[in-house]
Image (tube, one colour):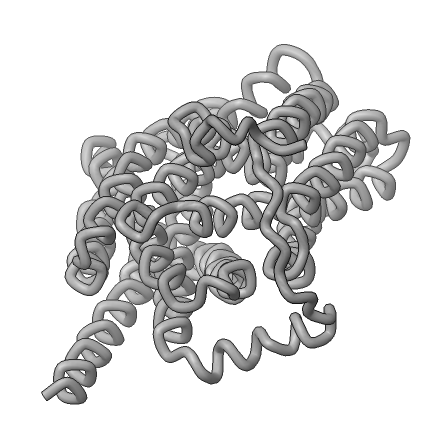
Length: 397
C-alpha cells in the first residue's frame, strides 16, 4: 500500500519528511570524520589508517549512485528506497557492534552504498512535481541533504565526546529504521513503466552524456563548484587546528553551523529556476563562489572574514547545485534517475578532487595555497559558463 490517495503526493509534511530523509542518509557517510582518532585508539590503529573508513563510505556512496540509483528509471522507487534503507540500518548496526577494524571498514562501505538512497528520493520528488514548481520542490530536498552534510560532523563530534563513537552509529541505525517505515507509508508506488535491462540501463548513461550537451555542461559545473566546496571544508580543518586558532575537533565541527546558514539558498535558487532564470543564476552564483575566496583569503588572521567567506561560499555552492538540477530534470522525464547518477557522480569526483588538492596545496603553501586552488575552480566554471552562454546566443541568432 502507498500513501493515502486523498493526500497530495508532495504535501508540506511529506516534503519535510523527504528533506529530513535526504539529510539523515547523507550524514551517514560523514559521521566518522571527527571520530577517527577515537576509532583508531579503540582498534590500535594509526589515525591515518582510520581515515580509510571515510574513504570507503564515500566510495560506497559513489558506487551506489552509479550502479543502483539508475534503477529508479526502471523499478518502483518506493520499493527500491525501502530495500536500501533496510540494508542501511542493518549495516549501521554492524558498524556499531564491530569487533574489529575490518568489520567496521566493510560496514562503512555498505553504509555508503545504501545511503545513496538519497539520490533515489530526489528524482522521485522531481517526477511528482508540477513543471512550475519542480525547482522549488527539488530545492527543498537538497536543502535537507546539504544540512545533513554540514551538520553530521557537529552531531557526531558532540555525541562521541559525551559517550562513545559506537553510539552515533547506533543512533543513526534507529533514525534510518524510523525513516524506512515513514517513507514506506508516505511514498506512492510508481506507475508501471517499460522494463529496461540492467546492462542497457547502465549503458544508456554514456548515451545520455553523449547526446545531452546540457547534462555535460551542468555535470562539469557541478564538478568545479563542489570541488571548491570541498577545498574549503578540507582546508578549514588544517587552518583551525593550527595556530593562531588551535581549536579542538568539537569546536571545528561547530563551523558546520555557519555553512548550514547558507542552505536557505537552495530553496531560493529553486524558486528562481522555476521562473526560467537558470542561466543568469548560474553566472551570478559562480561569481559569488569566486568572490567568497576573496573574503576567505585573510581568514588566517581574521575570524570575521572567515565567517563571511564560509556563509557566502556555501550559499553559492548550494544554490548552484539546485540550479543545475532545475535544468537537468526538464531534459527527459523518463531518465531522471540516470541523469541524477551522471550529475552526482561528477560532483562526487569534484569533491574528492577538492579534498586531495586542498591537502597538497596546504602542505606546499599553507592557507594561501588552499585559497588559490579554491578560487581557481569557480574561475574555470565562470569562464566555461560565459563561453557556453556566448555560443548559445550565437546559435540562436
